[in-house]
Image (tube, rainbow, N blue to C red; front, side):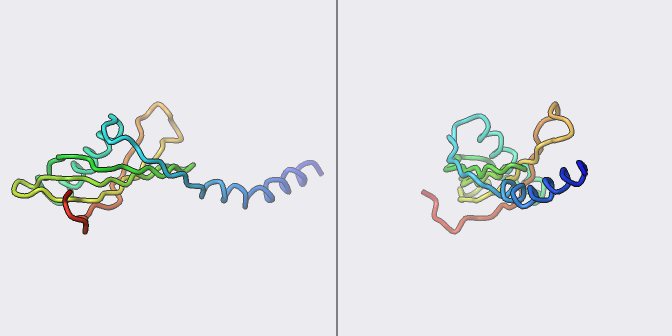
Length: 121
C-alpha cells in the first residue's frame, strides 16, 4: 500500500517536473566579465577549428544568458576580424553541466555561428 502511494505521488509530480525543466530566465551579462570573455573565445576557437578559419575576437557587443535547470544557453553578438575585414557574427553556446561529477569543468558546445544580418556598429 505504501509503495502504491509513493508511486502515485511520483506520477502526479511528473508534469510539474517537466514544467520546471522548461523554465527559462533570460539575463543580460556584462561583456567584460571573465566568464563572457571565456565563452566568446571558446565560440571563436571552435568556429576556427570547424571552418579552418582565422577569425579573431575584436569586441563582444552583447551576451544574453538563458538560465535553464538542465543547462544554460549563451547568445553572443560579436565583432570579429578575419584578416581583411571586421564583421559582425552571432553565436550560440550551450553549457552542459557535469551531473555525475561536479569536480570536472563545465562543458560548452557551439550550437550555431553565423554572419549577422545587422551592420557593424
